[in-house]
Length: 128
Image 1 (cartoon, rainbow, N blue to C red):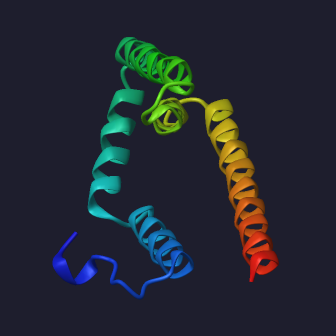
Image 2 (spheres, rainbow, N blue to C red; image 1 turned 135 degrees about the vertical axis):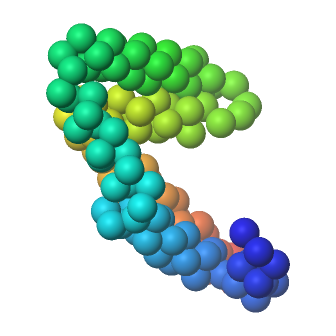
Image 3 (cartoon, rainbow, N blue to C red; image 1 turned 180 degrees about the vertical axis):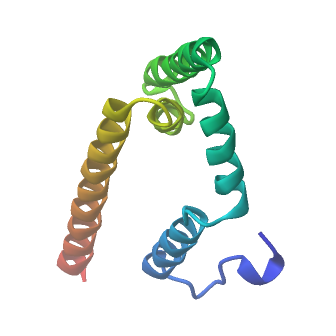
């Protein structure tokens, strides 16, 4: 992040959220060079059955450890949910159920934050 991208003192949480969502959508574009390279490497791995099996096992092990470790970190101060989502993202590269679970959790979290913001706005309106 360069200095001109840092949030200014007048930037509201809503504009910051919009900017972050726009940057995420741009980073997830399928035509990015790194994504093309990763797809090419994955196709090569698919052509080798033993390597494919080992790769899927490795992805499952790493993603599972991250997801379970993140769940253990949730009650503690720190990035518990971030680690859970990272584990699901790793698992989602190979397993469709993990992609669906991550999408459902993101929708649930988005609804929670919308309700939280509405509740805070209502409380601010009551005190004013």
